[in-house]
Image 1 (cartoon, rainbow, N blue to C red):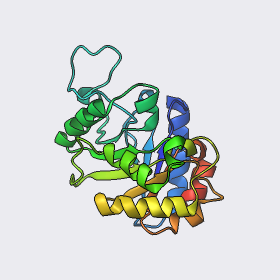
Image 2: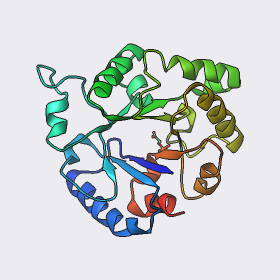
Image 3: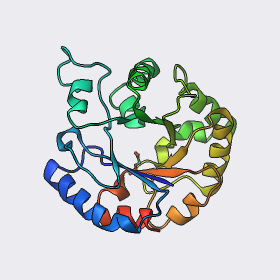
Length: 229
Ligand code: PGA
């Protein structure tokens, strides 16, 4: 299983350092085949080492240059970062990243040989129309994306389940993941209100290769409840 923690705009440099120290202390209990990813805010980047991979939640697809407020390869390489989240619904919807922007970012970081966790998801009004509409919406989010890339991990995150406490049902996750795997045969994470009380049933679903976690990843205790369940 893959366990990925997306801190979003939470935690500081200091609290991230403490978090990782505490996490590492418990990680010797994890299964050896499990992989742990942590996506802290950019200000918390440093040269950490442990049984986890640090990635960035976002970056700009350039080496360096005149892009006020953005961070490119030159800044990421200082911390040996080679993992990125691309296409999260908060970036698509709140920061207005279009499919073209997302695809450009994907192509650039693929060229840099980054491991990419690529997020897709549908809003509630599409889910309410049923699986065919959902799949049409999700597959459109692969436009311009090289789905054969060997360092691609896909994360399916229904937007209505993110941060709401209401995860998708087992049946919704199972049918969506089965359909997605037929189109894109890559490791596939589920995200959206994953927590200690639902990790056992979610991780037992066929074609769920891991989870992408926001809220329940913010404290080491709640994240470890998932990793060590
Ligand atoms: P959540 O967020 O676990 O707080 O629902 C998931 C995500 O946005 O990656």
